Every structure is written in C-alpha cells, then in structure tokens.
Image 1 (tube, rainbow, N blue to C red):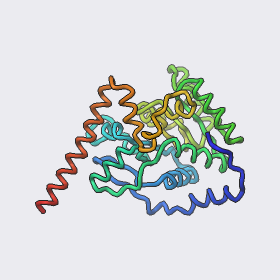
Image 2: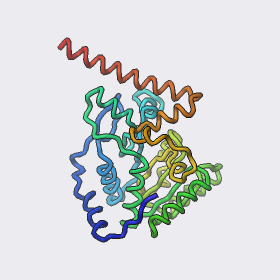
Image 3: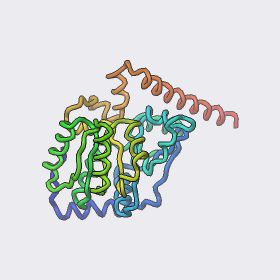
Image 4: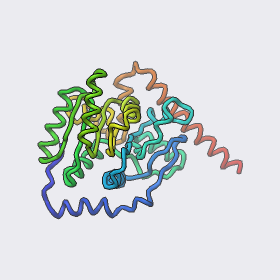
Length: 274
C-alpha cells in the first residue's frame, strides 16, 4: 500500500509543503457548465487540510469523470450535486476537454494517489477516519493494509456499504457519536453523494469524500484497469469496455465527447467570424 514514514525531517517538510500553498490563489473552471477545481494533487490535499483545521464542516469532496459530469450538468436530475466544496477532476477525459475548449486546467487528481496522501496526512496529524462502503471482507482488508503500513493510523469506524434500514440507523448514530475528522464513503455514484446530503446531521464537522469503488481497488479484490489506461486517467473508459452492456454509460460518454467537439467547433466558428 504505502511505505511507512518515520523521518522527523520528512514529517516537517511534508506538512510545511501543504501549509505553504496559497489557497486564496486557487480557483475553479467551468467545464460544460459544471464547476471543477483547477488544482494539483498537492493543492487538493492542502485544501482538505484547511477544511480539517477549520473544523466547521461537513465538507463534501467529489471526484469527476466524463460520465458523472454529464449527469450533473445544469437542468439534469443530479445538477444539485455540483455544490460539493471540492470538485476534483480525476479523468484524462476532462484534461482533453479542457485542452479542446482552451480552458486552463492544471491536470487531473488521481483518486488512489490522493487517498494515500490523505492517509499519510491523517497519520501525521492524528486525524480520525471512518470508512463506509464495499463488502465486509474488502473493507476489512483495506483496514489491515493501512494499519500495517501506517501503524497508529486512527481508523475509528469501518462498515460495509450493504445495509438495511435498521443497520443504516446504527451506522449513522455511530458516525455522529464518534465524530470522525474524515469520512470515506464508497457506495458508488450517485448513491454516495445523495446519502451524504440526506444525512448531513450525522456527519458532524467531517470532510466527507466519495470513493466510488476505491475500497475494492485498495483491497486488491477488484480487477484494475491496465496501467497504461490508469496513467492516462482513462479508468472510466475501462469500465465501459469491461461492461459494454451498460448502455447508459456508453450514452453519457458519447454525449460528453459530442458536446465538447460541438462547443469546440462553435468556438472556432466564432473566432473566424469575429
């Protein structure tokens, strides 16, 4: 998972690096009318660090790919989910779209790498973590891997994402009473984002992050996309190839690329006629 960090010098440099980032200079861009934070991975972690230090949440953190973005455009049923405090572009498809539309964008923020940075930050600052999602054996494997790699990491709650109404109430009360600093929810889009908003009163002041299937990936139980596609931020495309019968995903992917190309063409026409 992640090597153990024990050097005091490394600890100090690591925290100072985040503290030295000027958060006031960070901004958002609008991609197909959906807000996306224009940040590097370090800047994204620094933003979460700031949320954790303020302790006046809950703060919502969401990762975006072309399929999610199309479902969150204005006028769509899930447009309300575009109100997250941190909207991180995870996909190479978003990088491509920004280049086509000449939108300034620093690049994608890979979810797994971001999470490992966050675990290391939590370990150094003694932040508490609560994990919800996936199957019991998968989340237990992630817990074992993390606590082995980062001894002392405070994972104070871990629950499967499969529950009935009675179990759900117990989970929510557990979150409220334990008041974790970071809540990681891996129940898939948009279920996890809707669940966060419907249960804000139980999330206390936490930073709440939607993980999609990251728990399964971290556990080693889920087949990962080929390394070449991961490096290019095309995991979402791999999911379409792996499950081509999901016609809704094929539709949203086609709509995304068509919309970007159409807007790019209109921009070119406007420049020619200006």
